[in-house]
Length: 610
Image (cartoon, rainbow, N blue to C red; front, side, top):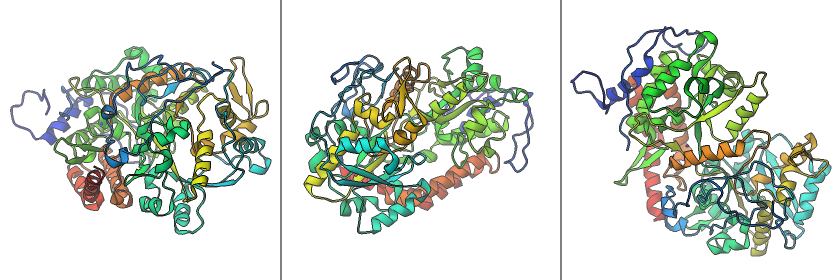
């Protein structure tokens, strides 16, 4: 879900840290002949082409088996980090109720596996002859299970006409039904549910604890306390849920005030990546080339920038407002991942740091130098309208599923276009690379208060739904019924039919419970290996947000809007609609509209969890 100048020229006049940071960025302005386009109704266009002497730049100082078996490591890091070295702020009474972690019993060993549980397994191919995971009596007792869910996909085939859904329910010995709403309608609907008296059995928490105000109070008053069933070794009764890594449970606020209420849907940890058109990048710089520092990166951007040929050096990432990947670039300058917990116990927001200010200054100067695709602010979909067509050579994008989306789209072009990953590097070569990490989850779920027998029944159903990747249960949930919903190609890989997509893929089983995320895309060459290597690099360079797993009511009520205001102001500074001199006031506005109170509440939450 996730950054002073050593060679300031010949001047001996003392300069401020702010001027320092701005000078850091100026090296990118070297080089002339930049052709700029003006767009009607656009933000102010970059300045006319100007030759500016290059300056030396550095960063600001920064602080196939028939039986199930646990896989042996086949690639990746040599040893798992200890709980203390994961980097996450996992401690206190909430950490004490975390479920015991039990590695999954896989149908076949992964092709790429690390003993570091922060790195997801990778498979080149779907396992042949999937083993059955559930060998006990069916988990359900013949009851109906009503689940409230958000629509991640287009509508599935309705239950009455969906033989695959019926088969899943038959194997569960339960009648699972979904009340699914559009994401735009979710905030109103979840509020209605919270205020009502008749709760669904399972409630999906979309976007985590920020889904609605006062969710922790709702959990404590109306939802099942799962601590007796899942905390510590109690989770061994549900081994597939126990395979979800500890950090996903803690970071998603599954535990509140020392009690366990939620279970997470696990995802990979890297947040963002710097991506490039490898058909352009590799011939110029060499395959796998990593910039040495900001000077080197500025040089490379100038070399790939070709406005006359219709390809600029950089372009915007998707999402309102058009934020240009500021967080991704901020890691290059050493900015915190959202917040930073200082050694003296203080909490510092990324936007308060000189590193973030340097990021904005550098991006402003590159915009003025004409290195950005000038239509970036007008893109309705930056992948469809910008990166995939080749309007810019590099971009900051989300790791994982966003990457495989534009990867796949590029292979469908004629001629094909290929995209690669640029490993993280720092503006100063003297500093270690940084990459921003998420909390390792996409969403969570809770269940309403019920009798112990009912809670155990629902947990058994969830445990069945979380069957490991490559098992018979996973094949049914992901691909459906053989011959109708999918066929096997010459490599024994399942190929969904259109019927299979709507019968299986669009039914949101995976958002009730799912195995730990796996990197697998059979149609993309070398996908698992490339993703595994990129993920390992980013996790090992990972910077975490210390507020993950802690709650600030103000942050979710006011802080998000305050940060959106900062983001928009940052974009305005980057494209020249506001001067860089406004930056300090923008930070002050954030502090006064929820930021300072959010800081206090997070520090209070740290103390309360001790």
